[in-house]
Length: 115
Length: 115
Image 1: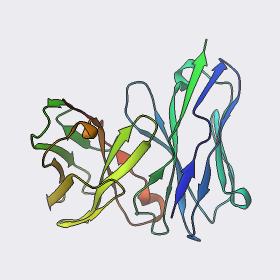
Image 2: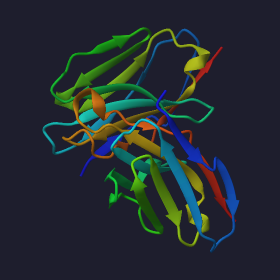
Image 3: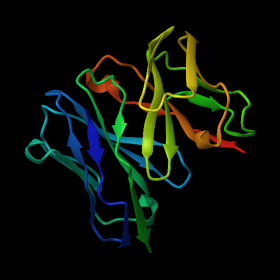
Image 4: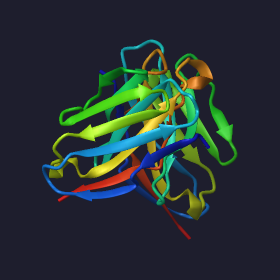
């Protein structure tokens, strides 16, 4: 069975601090896909990134970066120099080898960035 | 943004009444999904469809049925609503051919309250 664990339920930081959101996954598939979504207070779900299991390169997109480590089954998300607009619930998710199987979500981490 | 709409966006109903939620897409994507979001649970899959008239159950399918008679519409029906089905319901779509096409894009959500 697949499982995603986001151990941090809520995090609060002061603006301009760096923050890392943890994601640990479990799967028996050798090929799988990992995702991060953002859910701002308005409620929509915004796709942030997809990573497949055979690409362990870290990725940076502006202030966002992702660290994928198969050895520890982790796919952590770091926001550098956080801003108030980063306040949201962030979900990590996992899908199986076809990539089109339904996502299994973690329970989410609520990030509050205080000005 | 992916063309996904959900209707209604908000609904209040009474226990025992039937309810149908509609998801409509203009992207011609093959895969469609229904999730529910509850505090402390993240998002959980109810049902999904991998083509017209092809559907399968998810993690929390009891009490729900779905239908997909054409590519663009995926209906979720609560045959006899219960208070435990009070939730926010999200529809998602994906192209479903692997690689960069397996991101799931979400609709705006439907907030359902069962009294």
